[in-house]
Length: 252
Image 1 (cartoon, helix red, strand yellow):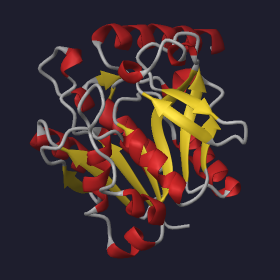
Image 2 (cartoon, helix red, strand yellow):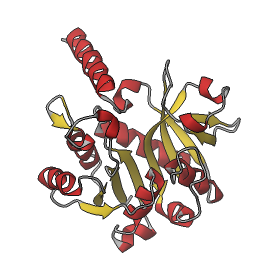
Image 3 (cartoon, rainbow, N blue to C red):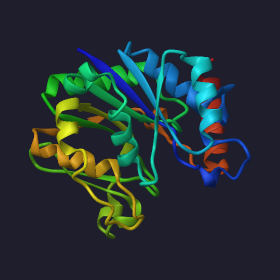
Image 4 (cartoon, rainbow, N blue to C red):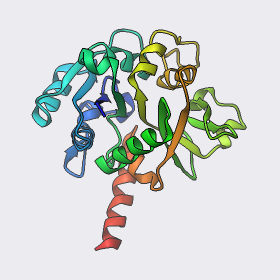
């Protein structure tokens, strides 16, 4: 199986409220970006692409230090994670654009590991899906996109917090911002979604849903949500550090 990994690192990360770009914030001695790159490298991909925009030079410098062969895609002025992925597709090797699995992850999931990504890839292949989203069940889903699953097990809808209805906000199955796509389906979806939503962005979730025209779109469930917890602000970082230290302490 040909594999390309895309790491999304173009956002401002303004909620972190520091002078350090969000992908370079550290957890357990490693930058968020280093953790994402090491997890991606562990899947043995044919290519790794990091999407950049804000603080581009610093992000690229860190990525080159950790993974010199990686390539970079510059996100244009169109906002949103969906647009970031579209920009990444343009720089992948031509043979990968035609026939590969595209693994996509955010750069702000400190505990993401190769084993979690490999499990997603395995389930994606076994299910015969053209697109799979890695999900987790959490007690407090605030801030996450909610995943609505149809009776046949396929994804019916992924709705962002700001766009969710009161009923949808009660759903505890959440999007972790990690995906596997068949490149062919993704390329067919490219350029076919807009920005008509509460944030005025081109959502990656809309690209995911557009892939339904090419085949099945499925959920892969991670049984340990902490491994996929994203960090958006200093309080979330402190909470994750505290919980992780407590867990490690219990194991020792």
